[in-house]
Amino acid sequence: MTTAADHYDRLLAEHYTWMLGGDIEAVATAQAELLRGLGLTARPEDEVAAVDLGCGPGPQCLALARLGFTPVTAVDTSAVLLDELMEHARRSGTAETVRPVQEDIRGALPRHCAPGSAAVVVCMGDTLPHLPARAEVRKLITEVAEALRPGGSFVATYRDLTRELHGTERFLPVRGTDDRILTCFLEYVDEERVLVHDLLHVRQEGAWHLKTSSYPKLRLSSRWLTEECRAAGLAVRHDDTGPRGLRVLHAVKP
Image (cartoon, rainbow, N blue to C red; front, side, top):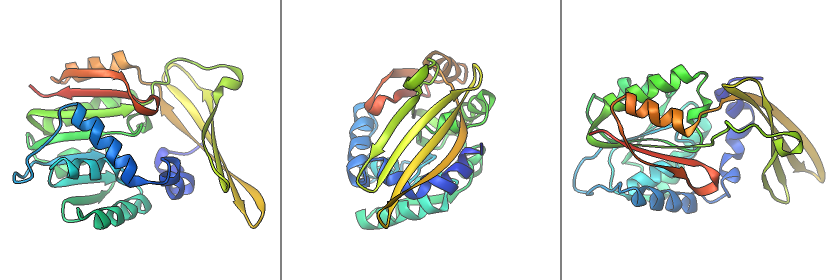
């Protein structure tokens, strides 16, 4: 078992775009539609700051830039994924808009965003459960509320792992192509955490090779997250299951 950051460095980072389907522009388009559907747009002539916590290869950053937000601060621990993000940004003509920051998302907002200045903070793609404890999620939500300007939005997408699976249900196929097959196996540790085992088969020179790594994820319920947002002073506008089975949470600072 390792931390989420180490897990991505060791195994997932180089395959992450493949996991998403291989086309970041298509994923960015879908994310832009999701955010637009929640009412998030900005006038391009204004400087309307956004922050993407756990940006990965950048589909949310590209989506925010398309919707007129600038600058977009992109925070991630993976240098590989940040480099990929900036390559996508250059190709799409938004490199001047995106500001990459390589560090942990915990404490990033106070360091890179003045209180009351952000129009949008997003934490998407199942990033919140990567934090080591619910107390860290609570602290992050407090930091989000402090960073947002009045009327600003917080959007999180995450997988609700609170319902325990049994037997072979715990084997979850992620994606399979001619050269790669990724499967997850879930091991329930306690009421707060699940241990995720990623099994990646890669075909090289006519033979299959298995790479494995494990890391803990939090079991965050919709009810708990909405209560934490309200406790931080945010009004929950949307809370429902969205694309790819991820839960979509949208909260606004009054």
